[in-house]
Image (tube, rainbow, N blue to C red; front, side, top):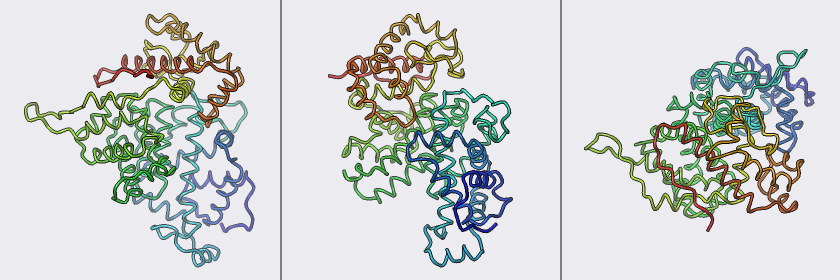
Length: 473
């Protein structure tokens, strides 16, 4: 199929891209045609995160086809062949493009080929991650009567989310995340969204040393090498927003894994000197540029560094982890500030069960949203009743405090706070405008942090040093 002179209509562009991603090796379509389809979709998605999320939800065929593309198991050579198949063509249009445009990458691709190689996985990862991030954990969509299968909301269930199963999908994603093409960070970010939304995926990731540790930290090592170029760390690096974003999203990948089983994760990095050098570099960066967006993870970076640098104790034959309590105390973040409160409340609103004694180990649907506070979620009526009168963390007490904040902000603003892409700056501005009690906000954030910590402790059978939260001086 040769390229058209104009951009295709949106319907045709979506259908073409879905067909390419569904059967990438079975079709031979001119790269310029794919390129034009990608441009049409890019023009229609909007400029804000909310607009892009809405576009993604309204085109589930792209999400399904994209997940099938990324989760199909392939060797590195098979992935290379697939990308070559999609990005090369001998038609006159592509020959002209190749002659007119210098190669854009080490892969020796022309401008169109380079654009396709980057934009297809970027589109899939961004659209799927946006859709999952605004979904309630473990709550799949309901089918619509009369809709064609390809137009049904995504995802309808585990098989719709991961068409090749848990292990197969992780093996498929690994091929895309392990290379050095330029889209690996987005694949890792998609892995984060999958882990947060569907806990069995995070559990399966923790069974894979490669996908949980080797791949994300190899990507982080390449990122650090690219920006530092082996030279000394200086403050200018901390002012680079692209670098900050690259590091942040890789570290965010580890967060749901640590929430699931901190001991298991740390066990996998223990004694790994090459990972220790990464943690060490990150600590050096924070020393000269402490205002990084990922500075809140400095404690976890230090604990990871201590485990990665652990040496075998001759007396026991096991790794000996040395942790300085004073350094732990210095790095323990102050959680009762307004930014942390906003992040913690947004996390609660996304759907983890608010019942500490929930027997389902986070496996419930969490579709039940407390009607009064409109923030905490529960697996069902039983969990909500148990949480309401819990001895140490009664929701009836916290609920009233959150309800007060909701009344002060206004119900419409309260709902707006938890939409994808809503920033802390916007949140803070509206809080001041509506005279929200900022001391109460900080107090609620701290109580939620303590509740989440208690819930995680009740699930974990592995003891890891967990310092107490520090209060604001």
